[in-house]
Image 1 (tube, rainbow, N blue to C red):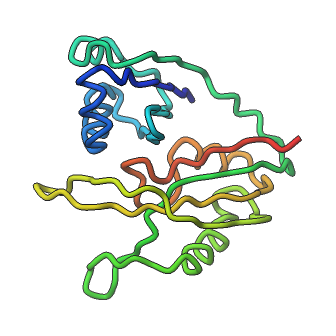
Image 2 (cartoon, helix red, strand yellow):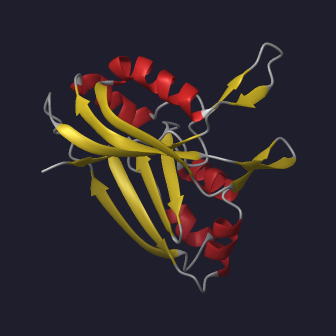
Length: 190
């Protein structure tokens, strides 16, 4: 698994367009993802973190988006021993389809309950969790532009299943894993 960090050049019109309209980042990354494996990404101020299973071909992007910004690539260390404790964070759209198929925003307590129930299958046990509102951004669905209201979920977890956790790191958590959501980020404690 690889991670790429892009520090956008604030004077680049290409970078400014991407920062102003995050749905363009989604399309840009899909364009360079020739292996068609899942890509997770998160935008934070002028930085874009991209997680991908296979190396991406950035040459086309360099042609179409010159002077986008500085880019660094790392291979992620997946040495995650059982029982180790980590800080975690992820952004999530906490919504669920109702009986009519319309998406409804859930209360944070409902998402916490869902994550606690799913955590065994994801590969960890939650020790502490909190949910805060993350900055809104706009996404494009069909031809409409809608305001997305993600939540930042953070806390402390303990690893219970390394294989399941690695799968979750690679493929994301939850149904809505586009536009920066579902990407689990870990930081060891100690």
